[in-house]
Length: 114
Length: 113
Image (cartoon, rainbow over all chains, first blue to last red; front, side, top):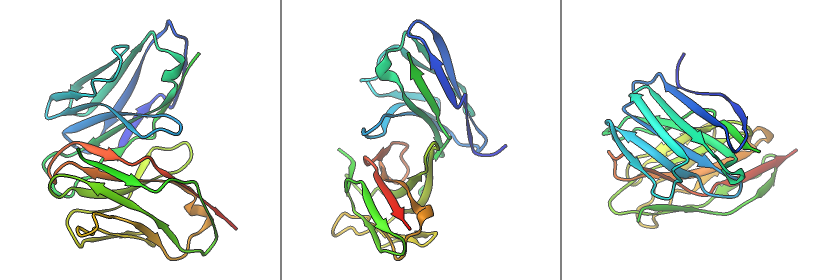
């Protein structure tokens, strides 16, 4: 496999459930990202793991919890979500400290909170 | 702070029309600039990029030139096709070796036969 792979592609969960989104990159990159894409809103950076250092957007609620066990895997743990958290969650990776590097995206997980 | 501003859509064009989607950037230093495309139900795919002033990125008939004097990176295509219907995002990266990307709000393009 190559590129950035996200699972599951679709997820429906109740507000009291706990679930996790998974992302795996096979590009040898050293930075991974979680983005939230909601209708008619800009792409929102939620979390960055870069060179094993975590950077986060302070506006992200604590019901979202990232985990990055190694440079190839990234998780987003979800608990007690709200309906407004329904969105497309995108994972991306890149190589830090290279001039020409871009972010490579997975296909996303479409999350619906009911 | 660093940001990009792109023209709002939606944009509707007839097949073979000329396309321009405007993008301007605000940054300290000289960011790398990108255009991404997103097809329905998919993630973002890199369309083209430029890493320094006067660079021209090109791919699949799309072009964009990094213009420092106007802080712009406008996307153009001479003759659009129905298959170009998608959402287009302008993006920048904080410094050339940084790890923080920032995105515009996206411009939806629909091409009609």
